[in-house]
Image 1 (cartoon, helix red, strand yellow):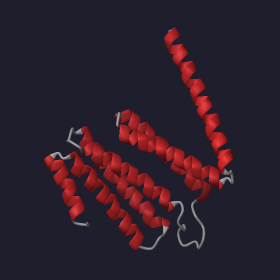
Image 2 (spheres, rainbow, N blue to C red):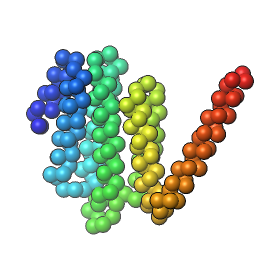
Image 3 (cartoon, one colour):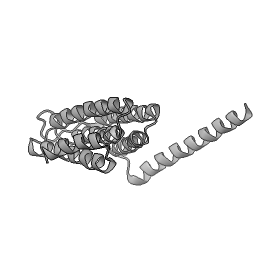
Image 4 (cartoon, helix red, strand yellow):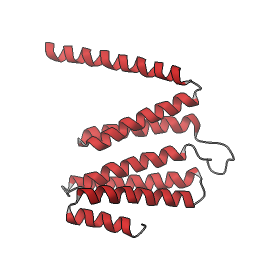
Length: 180
């Protein structure tokens, strides 16, 4: 897998194969996860993997901007991998602590990173990256609410209030746009 995944990624870009691009991107993410699991389960390893996966996403974004066929697939999957590894790092022991984890500070950074991914996806008009940003925001908010001690019903209430506020804001913007 360690040899086949990068080779498949190269061939996907060379041949212009969407199916091979999806499979090889997932295989590369699997290789990163395998490496993270084989090494000590410390947050620093997954933070490093997250940064490395983010760099690969940036490279794929650059290739996508150069109109390379199917580089956008790698851009989306590597962005998902970067956020996933960052999320995993928040639940592992931090730098030698026995039972500690990233806690609320990690969740806030995760929320900000997901918001940045959402904005980047909207800027690039890349639906997969935008979707990953939305999913990241939802997961970070759920983790933050859990860390704050809210039960499932209270968290659902928070999401309900946010959804109603977003609906009202959207309707107000729509009415303002149609009046102009």
